[in-house]
Length: 384
Image: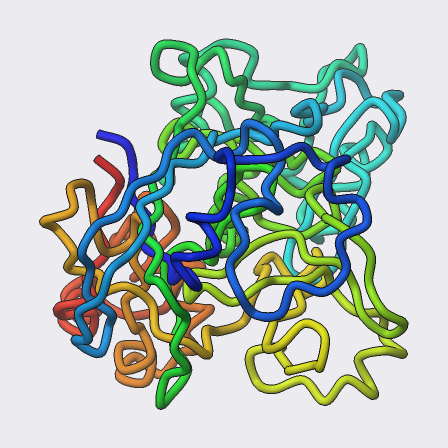
C-alpha cells in the first residue's frame, strides 16, 4: 500500500476551475501573487497524478471535505543525483551534498577524506588503498545500509539508493488528503512529514543524522536536498530551490511547496531579509500579496520547517485507506518530548523513518519502555 499524507487545501473552486491536473512550469512563469490559497495549477506538469473529493476530519475533530491528491514521488523537473563520489578525487560537480544540522558540505572526494577530522574520530575511512570510495552499489547493500540498524558490513560506506531498486523499479507515489481550507490552530504542532513540493516530492521530517553517523555511514543527498530510501523512495530533507515557481517581491522568495496544514512554503530568506520579516515561531508570516506562508529553514538545518501553525488532517484517518501516524499524518509529539525532557526535533530525529524505538531510546538516553509510554497514542508506525 502506498503511503498517505494528510495536508489541508484551500478552496475547492480553485481546483474546479483548473482545466487539467497540472500545468507546465513555463506556463506560469509570470505568476506573482497567490495568497494563502492552495493552487493545483502551480504544480509542475506530471507532479500530480490524480485527485478526487473525499470526506475528512481535521486534527481538532472538525469534519469537512478534502481533496485526495496523488503526487508522482520523484522530481518531474530535474534528474535525480548524483549522490556519492566514486573516488577521493571526485569533484563537487560529480557528487551530491551532505547536511548534518550544522552545515551543508559538498560530498566530493575531499570531503570523504576529511571525515575523520570533521567528526573527530579516526575510525572513519570510507575508501580503499586505491582511493575508491566504498558505495552501496547493489540493491542488497543499499537495503542493508539504509535501515536504522545498519548492517555492520556496510559501516564506512557511502549509502546511495537508485530508483531502479524500489519496488518494481517505480517511484513511491504518495497520496495526500487536503482539506478545502487551511485553518489556524490554537497552538503549534509538529511530527511526520512536512509537506509536498511543486515538482512532486514528499518533504520528509529530519533525516536521522546521529544514527547515520553512528554507523560510520553518509547517506548523501543530491544537490536539491533529496535522497532515496527503500520505504519512501525519493524524498526531500533540505530546501535548495529546485521546485520554485514564479517571481517574488523584494525581500520575499518564491513558493516551492505546500505544508501539511495547507499553507504555502517559500524558499529560505536571506539573513538580511530575515531580520526585517517578523517571522513567527514556525518561520511564517503574512504579507499583502502572499497571505500567510512559511519560509523554509536553510538546508543545513536538516528540517525544512520548524512547526505547523495550522490544523492538519487527523492522523487517525484510517477509513481513507493507508497508514497514519508517522507515515504522513502529523501527530503532536510535544507532550511526549516534554515528558522525556527533549525537544520535539530531537525526538523526531532519534525515531527516524521507519521508526526504530531501540535506537531512539539509546540516542535519547531513556529506556525503550519510557519512550513508548511517552508517545502513547502518538506512537508512529512505519509505512505499509
